[in-house]
Length: 502
View 1 (spheres, rainbow, N blue to C red):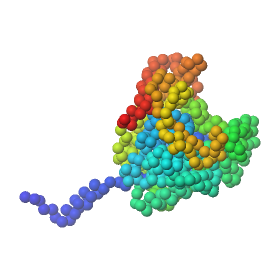
View 2 (cartoon, one colour):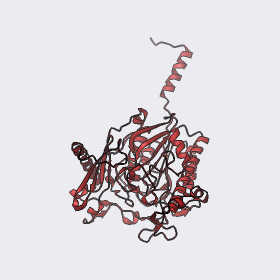
View 3 (tube, helix red, strand yellow):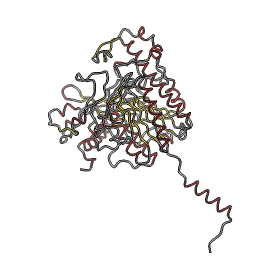
View 4 (cartoon, rainbow, N blue to C red):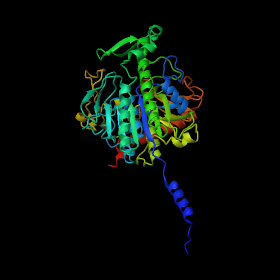
């Protein structure tokens, strides 16, 4: 016989069942990255001059990474890792101006399949942004974009949805944030969660600042006039030499303007009731560039495989998940972003080797160490010159359209390249590279005569990488070297196309 429940009790069971079945709303995501902004260039990390009140507040209210790394010490490779969760050498994105490949799977493609509205705003630099490019933002999963092939200054030109470049008057970070705010409004009208990837052009040289931001740093030219640095002239687009103090004044003005624009975005989220369930993330794409470097506790600058080349600010705000602020010594990387956001929304990961991991369980448990090592590698492209390389994409499709001040080969745009890789040879394993496991870091660097130098550092005791311990710990050097070589084997299989199924 069937039991018959009294009507009020039956209704209560139905309501409880509905509540249990109801899933929490998908989080919105805004993933921000700057251009050449190193770890030390924030107020919260103790910079003597920089004014970054918004980033400082994010560090005080959210999750602050003490050790967040760009996957590569230069821009295009890091951007490829950000989008794919894979080391850039797997897809032939060896250096700035090298595109990724259309067979790669991006976070935008994964989240779009879960019902997200996806937009890209700002620097792209992993291929041409024009509509016909097979590696443009639209081709790689974004529904809409306002993008540039490379970096930009005041009054930038952008391509909207792959169309011809248009000039936008104003400060570039502010322009991108206002575009993002309009994108958020369109996504909400459609009833869709949103993924916004905002890649600022600041603070990449050549530097330009608004008068009110420059005025904050008027004392720097007098304090740092004794050193000359080489960078691009805003007047000619060619290299020039200027006093460091003048350059720092303009660079720091750009960072402060970007900081203010991020504040405008945070305020919009609060005003619209979106802040609670929006994951807001910020990082840099590599360490501080040499032309704007003042001082750091870490060794090296942009391009270096010491920590100064790839340690960057790393911040998360997401009150629904992290209602209390904390800092973490967990070592994380831009390669971790795709697996993290994919797992948050239940998107299946691509069936291919990934170099990143899901950070959320580690952050939730306040873990201080990652279960897998971090790997870094600057591919030695000189070894490819003897080969008759076949372009991976039609060079016409790799031609950029959006102008910028800095000339390259006499032109004010940026073109891209990528090649089918020849059969693997021993020379493919060359180039500076490193592995970080726990607090131990092994760096392998080319030396004179074709030799390689191996250095071992204990980052917990020696964050400046000043004391080489390789001779004292040969067994550890050997063990880390074997892991590094095995990882390179995997990367080279990917580079040869093994992950693309044919």
